[in-house]
Image (cartoon, rainbow, N blue to C red; front, side):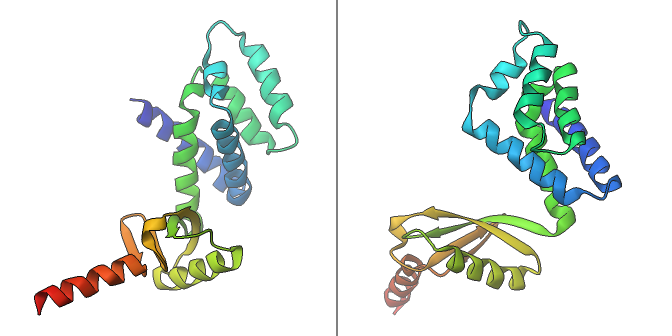
Length: 178
């Protein structure tokens, strides 16, 4: 049931973002809200607590986000507090971000490498995969020493594997077939 509620609220904010011609701004705002939630696991618990007055919660939201996010997104967060739906904020944010990224032609993925990639290396990989996918790709780097060298890129259910581990595995299979 909570995913239906989350999708409903995310769709409402997404529609407003399109009407206001501010999809980029709202997307950045909700990513900021999402990052605050990830940094502080008590965020949702505090704002969902029934013994804390809603006016106190909205004042705290004002102090925390005023000037950092747009007026409408700020009011959206206050509405979630008033309607006692703030406990769904993580799902709402994820759904909203997914809708905005689809609208903007952006897809997120993961690049696995044996070591930390530089920003330039990551940008080069994003560009190459983006041309192949015909979308803007945004990658997050995860270090996986078992790869040995090269990279493996995962976008949704698609995998581009250029790792040494994969090449060794393919070589081994070929040698075993002969």
